[in-house]
Image (cartoon, rainbow over all chains, first blue to last red; front, side):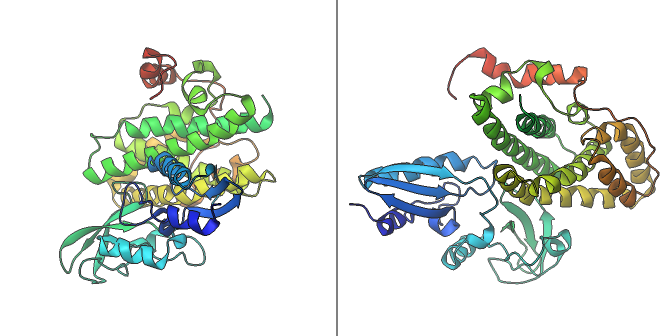
Length: 161
Length: 222
């Protein structure tokens, strides 16, 4: 019989469809796993509602659970339970190593424009804090664009959500 | 149609139609950054519309796609503000800021709703809308920083003001009007709102274009 640990391990092998250096478990979109005989129920808390990767994540979780010999039931949780604070420390380090600046933690209250415009975000290439906001929006809903004035490299910054 | 479904469709239609209008800047915005910004905002708004349509579809026994694309023009519940085709920058920014400011008032109310599905989804949507509001506020600052921008913004806001008031119902409208007046340095008159339930000719044109692919192959899975 399949165990919850085995399911978590299998889901931890699924790469994010858009940023494959990080797994779905590291991304924090798997909220809960429960096993009842050969039925596995996964609570999936999506990132951005307009993200086209969501359907694919869901399909790949179903496939991975089927490969364990169980039947998947993916329940999509439509509330604000996903936050970038759910990205694991390992996941954050993998993002940084791949050139994506990880999202700063949510502070008390909401992220504000003044924080985005501050120079406290570090460049993922040279670690300088001399960076500036180029665009709140980027190539996907989850990213902003910044520029490092030390190494003159534009980079992608995960939005804090 | 019950009150809950009516509310879901109102917000979903606003987000879908505005998302479509925002996508009209893809490829032709005045700066590359704004091309990216409006394309991304559009993607978010259409994602919000889908999630809201799914809740409504579960009650109506239909699908989100059918609600988004198969209804007759007169059955859409969007506010006339989002229907207007405004391929001009000052008006685009004015509408963007007016809509996001009104939408924030609506989301705040929904987040404290006793309906857990609605409250939860509103909280999720609001996390994304926060970035839309930051973007809109940044542009208001930019336009107000010079006389030419200020004059163009004022003209555009005054033209759209009756439409903006029509986004919210009687109960929430005063909160929105108060915030708008506190933010903008020019007076906003007391006017009759252009409310939901009436449509501009521009909506029919938009729907004709938006649904053309779906109508070309009824029942197809994409």
